[in-house]
Length: 180
Image (cartoon, rainbow, N blue to C red; front, side, top):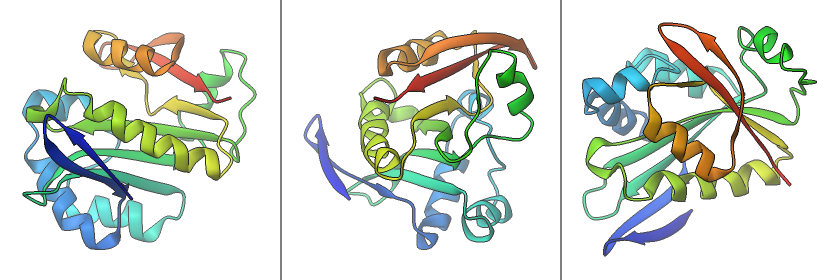
């Protein structure tokens, strides 16, 4: 757990716990339709969240909580290894995939906190954990919509580079970050 401050607001960064799933469901329900359309690694319902974080051991959640209100204001999911349906496409870029050292990542930030560096703070917190467990590469979960220029710049600012593009409900970019 880590405490950070943005514009005088205290924020707790930590790993998701099972007791947080109701807060996470509330967070996801509160996202605007535009943000929901850009974040789609899993369903937004209780059953989907329970399945990911209770029934499977290869997923980790990371959250940012506004201390004063206790509400989740940012969330990232990491799958240790790769998504089975992404692996064939990623191999076409010449990647030698390693399920033990690769991770798949998808972040989101609540609409009222976007553009305030919260996503970067949560990523840095998450990155420490991933390096401790031996992750060497982070690949975006299902890529990023090419039309989402703000997100593309965000990932580039974190050090991600573009592997290639693919079409799925519009053009998307596969991006990856090689860790030191």
